[in-house]
Image (cartoon, rainbow, N blue to C red; front, top):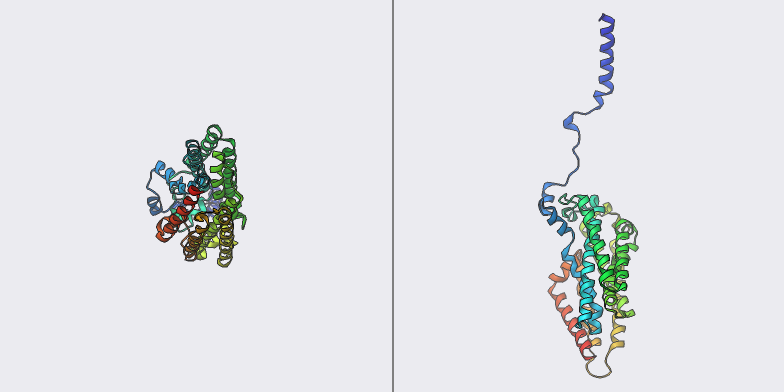
Length: 335
């Protein structure tokens, strides 16, 4: 090789180094894939996938499904074997369906949950449960719930459950980013649970029940959104579901909802009062309104992020709920 060839090769190596090698950062400078912090994984339940799936199913949230007993209780037929069995099946179907929705929702909200101060500890967000496992488990639970309702109960229950699944999935993948509609979508879940109990047992649902449950649910959902807004503070802008709301607007929503719920309940109570004897339904207005006001105190403090936990730890609210239940129970038994 002559001198000219050596010079030409040296020049080519220099050009190659400047244009290719220099553009590639050292291995130590290449950013590693983003992974949940180790403490998030530990708090989410360690490394157990099965335990993580069970946690993502939110068994504590199954208390909401007790609403399927509302219509049978109000009709006074809940102790009849056929009604009790139908209500129990509706409860189980909603537990499975709700758990399936939670699994798919956590897959959908993976990145947003990792930026949330509390939700980042959820098993999917923390990396305890792989995304394919969560998605597969969610779909299987929905299939089992819908199939069981269709084969083992009335078609009306299957229809109500299908509506619940459709609205919940639409909420998870789209409606949660639509102002006001997202509040209505979440509130509809509570209403459909109540309607499902009547559908499973073949009991007609009154217009007053739908009104009270709808606006009572909207009251709770607005309080939940307000608690999230307070908890996130400046980080609320990172969640699209909260960008459209202000604290004053959510206060307006829960005030309006509480007013309509109390008015509708009072109209029902006056309509159902007994002509003779003790007017238990009318008396029940007092603990009902007081319970709404007591819950509003917690909402105003921003403590209503988890309604099921709030109800269980607020003893005053529990007492008011018990008094209300006794009044309604007395009205049903003496009616």
